Image (cartoon, rainbow, N blue to C red; front, side):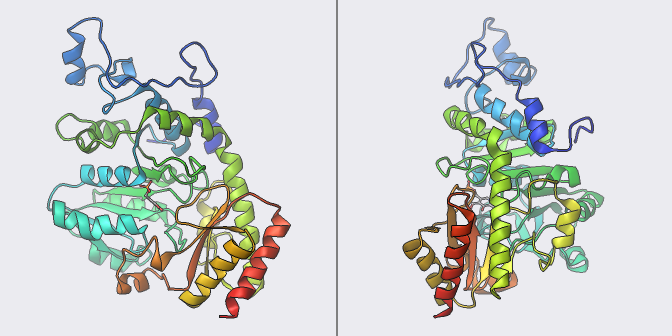
Length: 410
Ligand code: PLP
């Protein structure tokens, strides 16, 4: 799936793929807003419907199928993720649900990490069993014997996040890919937390999904997603009879595709700065005696794995978590930082220019029941910070320190 001729650096691959010109030779891509497309000869129409002609040959049919502007963005994302193909969706959840429904039929089984974004957790544990008869077993994927015990003859997918939300454990992708492939299953990886830092396809992932809503768009003004995979898998998603994205229809608007595409050239700068500051915040909190989770710290349980698997030059991600011991302290920490220091915002989501803070147990992981929260290591005092790059770093570190001391008074 991975082209060995391509540069190892994801932004270098993007630069090579960006030889796309606008309609009049403009240096930006054009926005094709049409929902439907003409043909010059009537005979072309059935050929497109039968799949003998398609977007690769410049034959477009209808906006929910393929759109030229969305396809340009998809090519850029495929270059970043080192996959042969990609396509975009209206949200990250549309990408995840579409991919899982494509990979599994009723009666099939998924093995997944228990530490997942709450929406994905609910999709796997509540929605898919009830609506589609697809069961999931969640196990600690680092525990090889538990993984083997959870595996069934009808297991089709091994699913994880590169960096788990919000516990920031780094998946051992090469081992998981081998495990899944030896059993004829797909490794599907959500790389939303680790764009550029990690390239899961290089480590064996078959399908990589993103919520583009986060770091990749970076402005918290668009909800969007993508699937990066082989050409064969992407084509299956758009099959007229059994394509889950074609038939469920979560199409990306071409105007959104244009916006996201124009922000990709500065993704490398943004990701590096998010990570530089996240490391500085993590070191500051650790020096104060806080329980910090950040893969760039030597104290992180997956630090060696991070050093072995991560791409050079993009740091260890823009997210960190700190366990303040109680929900009361977590709330005091966030309220002080937002309302007294103007350090950032209490808001879910991530990848924004300003810092966003949330207590995961009562927000983005609230879909998990108490036992699942415990199993995933999400305590009530855990605060997730998506570290922004606004303001002077020294000022921010002082604000953070004052926020930590304010929390300890509770
Ligand atoms: N994957 C992860 C890791 C997320 O954190 C989220 C949302 O927070 C999603 C997927 C869902 O993305 P979207 O909100 O774009 O549907």
